[in-house]
Length: 76
Image 1 (spheres, rainbow, N blue to C red):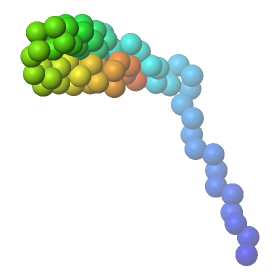
Image 2: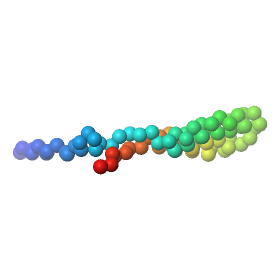
Image 3: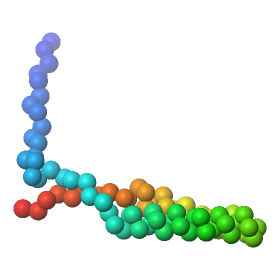
Image 4: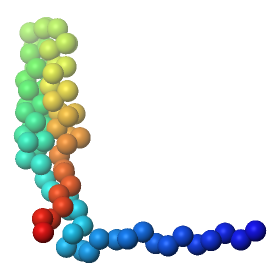
């Protein structure tokens, strides 16, 4: 039994390939999450506030880090 060789998939031209771009909103969300994470850590350690105070900062930093780049396809 022989296997047939499948043809190579079509590759777009270099000018039409998606490029990774920095997402400014994702970067801003990451920086805000990190900044308020530090502030909430200081509030937790110095004033003895609840540790749940840091949760929104962790969520913001994680979401920003996951969405820091985006794929853009050049327009024709």
